[in-house]
Amino acid sequence: MWKTLLLGAIFLCCYPVIEGKPRQSGCPRTNKVRFCGKTCSTDGDCRGNRTCLCDGDCGMICVKNNLRCENLPKVKNGRSSFSNGSYFRSVVTYECKKGYRLRGSVERTCRATGKWDGAKARCRTLCQNPGHISFGNRRIERIKGVKYIHFWCFDEDMFKMVGTPRIRCQENGQWSAPKPKCIYSPPLCDKPNIPDEAAVIYPRSMDREFKYGDRVLLKCKEGYFKSGLGVYQCKKGNRWSGGITCSPKNCGRPNDIPNGKIIGYVYSFKEKIRYECNEGYNLKGPSYRTCQANEKWGDKDPIFVDCGPLQKPDHGDIIEQVAFTYGNRIVFDCAETGYEMKGSRVRTCLSDGTWSGSLTTCEAPCARPTIPVNGKIVGNIFSHGKSVNFYCDSGYKRVGARSIKCDDGKWDKPSPVCKGICSTPRDPQNGKLHQKVPPERFLDGDEAKFFCNSGYDLIGKKKLRCVGKVWDSSEPECKAMCPDPGKPLNGKRYGNNFEKGSIINFTCNTDHELIGNNTIRCEDGVWSGSVPLCKGIVLY
Image (cartoon, one colour):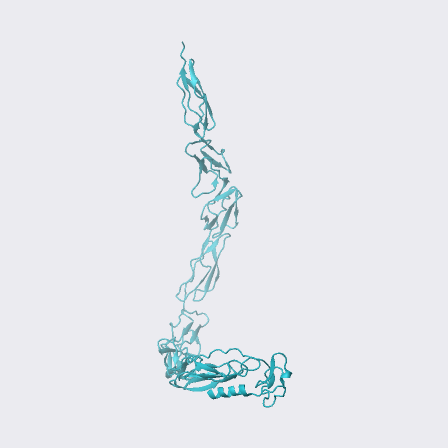
């Protein structure tokens, strides 16, 4: 390092400066890319406060006198040495501490542009050897001065890498990630395709992962016999080895039946055969039989069936009847107009010798229902099972069922009535109307009751009755009442009305003088004055 500094000092101090003479010898331009200032041969080629000097990169150019480059920052974990401070052509040399590696330029020179050439210097720590990984290997490489390590597992089918396969040595001396691990992870197989005829013995649940080497044990379901070992094993490449073949058991040809024949030629498990009777014969029992897992045919051999005759219903007829044997049917209908059928219209002879469905009857129609006054009926069919609806005119309310239904000649509910609706009276001032609970509209025949607050008397009818759609009287009023004021001794009172606003007059007997008001008025339950006095007149 000191040798470099000494050479730099010699270069600065001893470079020849000859006024007015060319200075190009020994100072060629070495950088053809960087922008350079004005070239020169002598100081006379330069203007202003500039001198023709050798730049080192650009050759001879005009350089500003006392040119200085920017101050360079200190290098962390290293040191720098300057040949001539930050002046033109000064050289700075960098050196890192032990355990650190220099990145950037070892030397940088202050050029005529006022900038330092080369790259910024940094001292980076050295990363420790992370070591190898079990069941794997590694490869080290450098890219642009940065160390990388690539890891991989030996058998990627049997081992799975957990972590980052490529790590980088960072500027802080630490690896970008911990070294990975090769974890034993055998390959997985999808669930094997189990034949419909087979069942799993092991494992208990198929809702799991299947790894390399895992086995699945199988057996044939009831009704099948096994061929093969019945073992599946998970192999590499998501492949299963082994298998099972389940073949159906055989029931053999069933016995023939008298007066009939068997249709079908396959007699193995789950297969069906069909019976057909000769003309004039019917089956009792199913027409099909199935080969079962126990190698026997299901159900019993069919036999001849007769359900016997059925009687026609009252007011009805039988419109279709061929025979009373298995599979035949009887169809009924009601003969008289307005009668409705109840029960089954069609009944079929069953294998157990009984008829399907329920007893058939013909039900009578109903008479026309009563139409309510101020209302109407919707529906004009009054046969069994039919319904009609009732509606009231505007201003009337239905009391009773909205809909009634005919049941064998009788309506299930009485016809409703339509009652007129009276408007709801208002509460009297200082009183109250007694409403229904819950509140409803007042109908024809309903009563409305009124009450007055304490200190008020009811003027008018206490009860009003709804007649048709109007009230039988006008609404009452609640008026405040004053107490009976009495009458003066030796005097008289004129007026017996104690309502609000009423006036009472007083007079005295002969030979008596009235002291006080001769008139008082009832105002909100209080008299405007007291009863006067009648004082005798003394005669001298």
